[in-house]
Image (cartoon, rainbow, N blue to C red; front, side, top):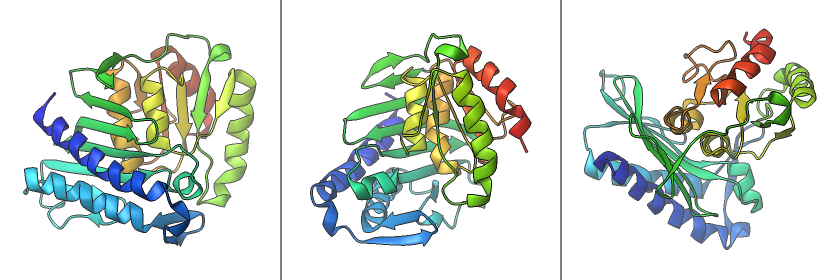
Length: 264
């Protein structure tokens, strides 16, 4: 395992132990609302600090972009190494004890994602990838699914939960995709959904309005597993724009066909 990936795994496991401890007594976890339907807990913050501590100890000059604490002060002095962190993706699930959430950590070097970890603490599923070296689940090589017809595909998605104005457009997409695919799933943690695409548990995924830390690690897992990630027009500028389509190559192409009218 690449030494930088090894450090990221160590950081993810450190965060997971904080998350797991809290999950045994979820009623006691303090919750605050950042915005409409957008929650943060003291556990998100503690897990994020634990991750940053591990990364900073190993790589003190690297920059950080994290969901709860934002950007580190050295992010904008053209830093070549940026760790992109989501301490708990799926906080709403976590608050309810619904076991579908994960820790997501990615390293971006000179604009490219080069290391990725998505860790599901409830199932002990560790998804990892290093650019050019393949994607793994618990140290076994993973590939995107083999199904090549949309009618047989299981597709993941996310509802627009912050911006209710996006709901009408989403309902149109929902209708199109429900008619065309074998099943649509909305588990509630985008980083984990993307990891599932990499492992072939989902054949594709689409969502609008995501943040960089929701997508960074998952996007490398998918490309290293032989899949494609893009925006709704099939282009590659999704990471800071927030609209993402992902899937095995054939399913991705069919999703672009169906969803490119919603590329705005």
